[in-house]
Image (tube, rainbow, N blue to C red; front, side, top):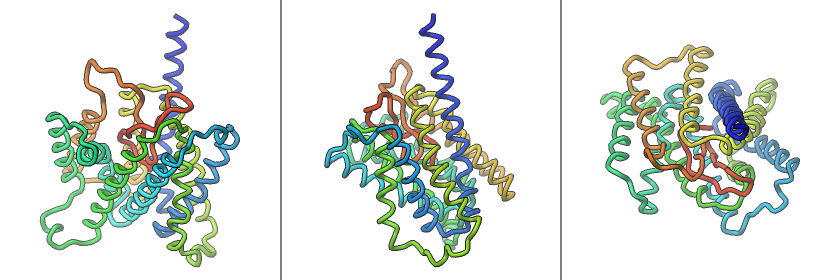
Length: 328
């Protein structure tokens, strides 16, 4: 009886941690927009402050001792970092060309890219049922995007923004496939390597002159690193070790829900009725693709937004992602 009670308390704590992390993630778009910086600058300073936050946490917890990296796994983490950083740049550009709401929902096609890329690159089996749910999800995507046939012929910033969110999701899917092949390394350290990679990658494109005199806007950039890359990841990784896959997948949708509310509350943006019809299609299909089939017990919890890795033990491998985002 005591063990059952303890397990329930542990799961409840994990649910609270993941909910908090997803709520923080839902405010990401506001921090990006309010910073007033270009997407390249936003991501550059996010990885700088994020590296300081994650590095400080890992150092305080003694994670660098017996880190578990090999030349191969370090290379994989770095490659995953390239995909993650470029994914952030495209997502933040999408905010400018569409809206936080539309970009976030479109970005949540990530799980389907993971499945499709796994089949294409690693010949992972895709069942007829999963293929059907993916088709349904992309039907929902068409509705949510609000793109009309005229947009397809005329182009424009909005169509570009939708494409940027889709490409960001694709890059996230590539990062997931790379990262989940890393074993024996704490997810905090994998995330640290991934943000560190972003510093030299984006340094040539960072416009320091544009950051002079931004004053209070620096607080938003520091927040993106400390809150959305440090605190948020720590909460997520702690939660993954306590929760089953099904609960992670469901709670992950707190992120887009909060993002849409924030977009409406702060900027007055909201999706239209026809667009709203596509949201439940994407949510339902995502859960069907992500959750284990009935009668099967998942080996480990799935991971969430980028870079998302799960840990069931201190040295656990990173795992596939479930819908949520980061991080975004």
